[in-house]
Image (cartoon, rainbow, N blue to C red; front, side, top):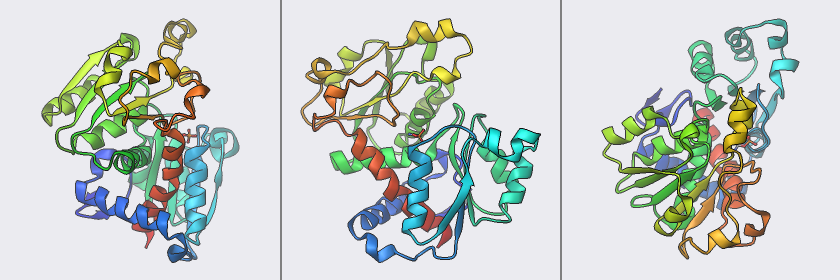
Length: 308
Ligand code: CP
């Protein structure tokens, strides 16, 4: 789906080469620094947002990105209820129809593989905005951009991913992107019930990226440059008892922040539930609101790349 630096659909992180990532990051910086230079770039183009699962950041940052580039947007929240999916229309038929109205379609769906199915039938670029526990590649772009922005490097970073790593599509997508860089080391901190998938571990082994699996967050905090917290995803559990067994298992508070390095950062794709105490927000190492803000500029750069 990516040919050299050309991009058609955005379905999974593996598509992005280092060169393409660097191009997007440089363009994002330009858009952050001089937004007025890009007004009107996508004038006359229409973005459709089909969201079959809830969203605040992804949906609104994509809309803001398109509007700031001079394009227009349309779409449906809660598409399971308010689109013709409620009447039994397949995702494929919906995409065939909407791709006749829009120049790009942003899709969030509860089923893994949904974005790939959409891309197979769409006449216009599809952007995966999260497919169940599968991937969330544009979140990974903004996460990697944030690491680069905050630490001034990506090569050599030591990253702890914490929480629900089995259902967390953001950690999956970010792991794929990090595996493209040099001297990366990863810690997967999770209870065994929601451990990182074997497919990702095999991918890291294949790319010679060292990783460690542990349940002990406090032991890892002094060793890493990035702590990437995630929410235990209640909506992905079919058994409430299984959810109750792992909910609230990790929590960053002022005391645990003292274990982190002075120049390390705390990230979270958000929304958070209770895994980061509000008292941490004022710590300069708490990067999660800056991270969410970066979503606007990276999505501006991505839309520009796809549509200009
Ligand atoms: N990080 C993220 O995907 O947030 P939303 O669910 O609000 O889009």
